[in-house]
Image (cartoon, rainbow, N blue to C red; front, side, top):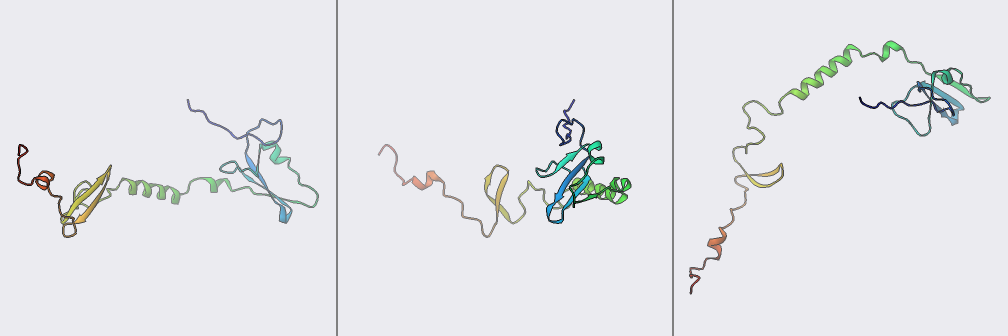
Length: 146
């Protein structure tokens, strides 16, 4: 069974599960309380339901409570269609029918180097001349017994 970590309320001695995130805009003397952030931020405070409801701000400060529409949080038909299109795109072959497979060397090309799964292809016209056979290169016509 996988271990699921839950974010806890930032208030000391509270073990409640965090449901909202509090942050401050010091320049505007504003505290912003909104839905739980996607990930824990170092300068924000995660609060449980009870502490979110009881939150007060210092004198002269304003609290902005952001409560998203619950229907807006549900996946829309556009979201589902975008997901379906992404799945279709990922399943589509990466090459055109009739084109050489990625493992084949295209006509008019030659493989000149390879390292792991990477390879260097060159046009037949631009390909380097093949190396001379090392035995022929060092053979000066003499026998080794001479």
